[in-house]
Length: 192
Image 1 (tube, rainbow, N blue to C red):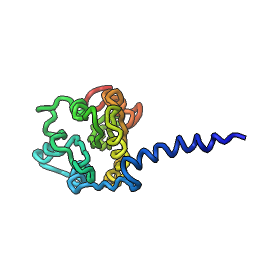
Image 2 (image 1 turned 90 degrees about the vertical axis):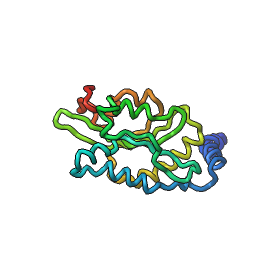
Image 3 (image 1 turned 180 degrees about the horizontal axis):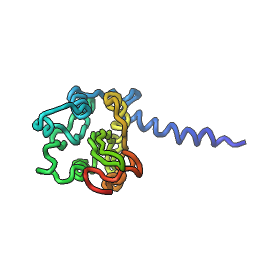
Image 4 (image 1 turned 120 degrees about the vertical axis):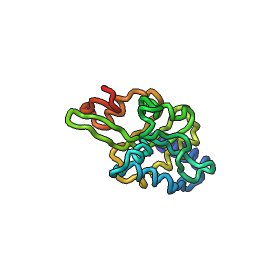
């Protein structure tokens, strides 16, 4: 009779739970989403008729991070791309967005992807969970456990993408696959 099955299950299941509880206690993350994050999302989601100045101020991409006390998801200052920057200070918005991502910490992001299929031109918001290999374990765990809090506020998002390193995100064809598989022929005006 083998008794190692229960022990093996406990090592596989209990060890990560104990590690999580040691880092965060027995409660869920309890992280909330700031009103500014919700406003940014709503502004990006709603594409109403606007003046050209209003369109230029609309965000093309933005990063969100945890507050210093790790209790709230906030807009990360200075890590955004405005529609008005494209063609002026930003040549390739997708490449610029990738450069905004920190190599040693997690982030959430919204990217307003403009792409073409064989039939039409489209724009869709993509929610990105950035958890690079070089991020500290504690950061990965708290961002992962807080992801549902921000996703619940982002109603109507069609595309979600978890990215674990630059190799996964640098090639724009990976995002194109998330948006529509092999029917996407260009992303941000650049052929695939």
